[in-house]
Length: 65
Image (cartoon, rainbow, N blue to C red; front, top):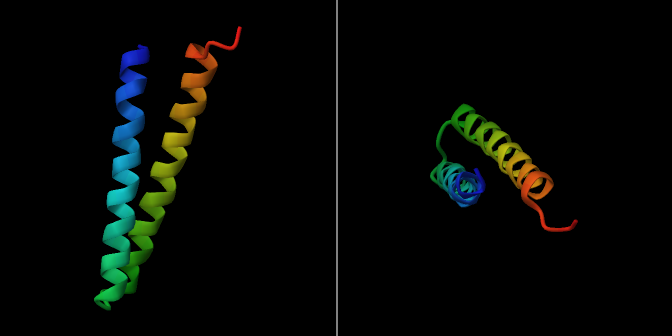
C-alpha cells in the first residue's frame, strides 16, 4: 500500500503543475475566462487530493513511533 501512495503523490503533484500551467497559458493567450475558472477549480481539487494523500501516508506509514 505504501508503494501506491509513493506513486500517487508525485503523479498528483505533476497533475497539479500541468493544470496550473494550462491555466496560466490560457490566461496569457486571452482564452475564455470560464475555462480559466474551470482549470483553477481542478487545480484546487487536485491540491486537496495530494494533501490528503500526503497526510494519509504520514499517518499510516510514518516512522515517528
